[in-house]
Length: 217
Image 1 (cartoon, rainbow, N blue to C red):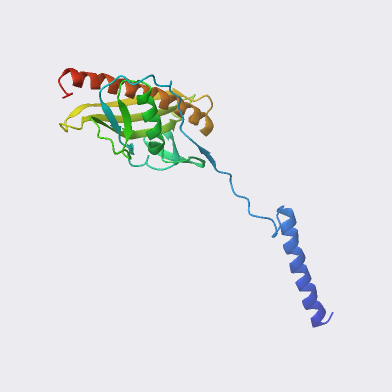
Image 2 (cartoon, rainbow, N blue to C red):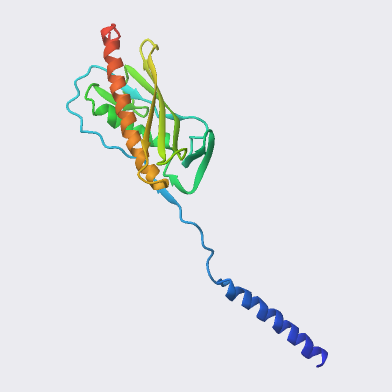
């Protein structure tokens, strides 16, 4: 075998080995790279349609803020106390705090206890302001079945006197129907409805108390 034939033989052997590796690995250089699918979910809640508003006060609902770590669209879960982790293929469609804003307005409107419930985009002058902070929204696998924990801190403020009328923290847990991200989403939506209904009742109670104390001029 001359030098040319030997070189040709070596080149063919290397090429054959390369294609054998590709075949055994089940891949081809012409195939697209596979990527994990990303699932996105929304926070949702339904409240009964409001009757004709009967109150005298206008309530301004500020866009909720969020504690550090809970201010993104990433879905949080815990397997150990205090150790936060994130689902890699599942996320919220938006920051949960921002998704809560229109739902909170709907919950408050459903009470029919305010002349109007407005947001920060409104030019209407308000009597009261509601500030809300998302403290936590997480699926906890500390026991089975897993559960979702939602904590919201709210503060009701008299816009005329700038006085804080009341502050409260609402903590709601809901068991997940399945121990996976989708089960957590279902539990989260139940927790949202419960928590927002509690906040709406709290605001109505404190608003009436403020009026009785002479808060309404």
